[in-house]
Length: 232
Image (cartoon, rainbow, N blue to C red; front, side, top):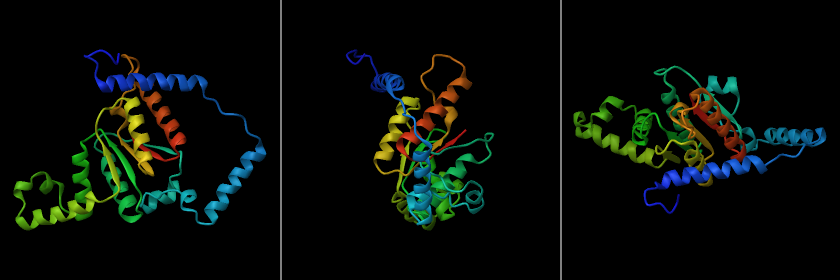
């Protein structure tokens, strides 16, 4: 397929990644562990938490009531946030981004398929600056002072440790992007949202396809050692 002039580079990458994934499923395995080994690992993790090790303590969302309910976000966690359309899932992700980057200095990766990266950037500027989204979207209505204020806050948000992606939605490409973000230092990945992804299925059951995508995201979280928040 690589030698055909009509082949799209993303299709080739998707095809190759799918093949590698299938091979990996056939050859990878995990050896059994004794109760003693697991117990020692558990005590090691608990001691690390008691000593205040940031990695062991995990990440906080910055929303106190939520953090009290779910505790911290730990490496290998897959957290699926499900709600009907229009219930504020994307706004919640924006709040997570602001809290984790501004308050805790964590580097985040955002894969946004519900809206463009630019729109998510605008949402974040609006949240940190209290400039309404209506004014940001209709900048021709801003006064010179309001636009200058927006530019100041835009420069601030630009410097926050966030990696954005709003491109191809196939699972194999998304997996590569998540791995690239983690390689660049992302400590948590957020996806908005799962139903807009696909795994290259050929007209199969959509529910099964979403289940397959979710399983793959859980595997990625475990493999990379970062929490993944996925909206659904």
